Length: 136
Image (tube, rainbow, N blue to C red; front, side, top):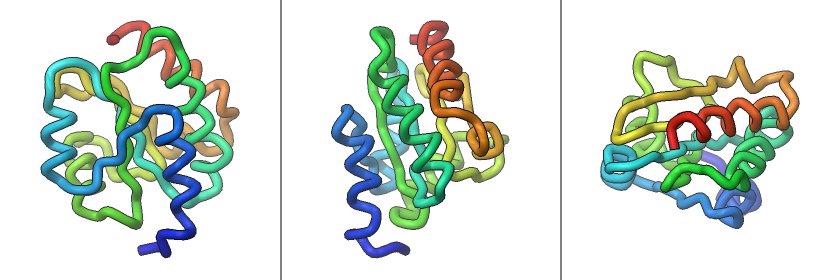
């Protein structure tokens, strides 16, 4: 667990553009398994989250066509919520940061850490926007 004062600005990067924080397993399961499209960002304190993942998520969120809900869980903070989200992302292994798109409770698109590291935020955002255009 990290001190809240450390992660607060990292949380705010996403919540200020419309992401809802999910902090327990019930909220994760209810939200992701709901009807419609849900974009889940597994946030992290790592450098690739700061330089690539969060900027990409913000860019994609600004697209005209986007998911019905955009939510985030924070690795290293709300363990129960993160575990629940990762369970719904199986068979993909745990990865943070990572991003997943669900439609009617089914995983339809995922971006894992290895697809985030070393890639420009715009490239990741373009990948997400393509998925939004296809599924939302």
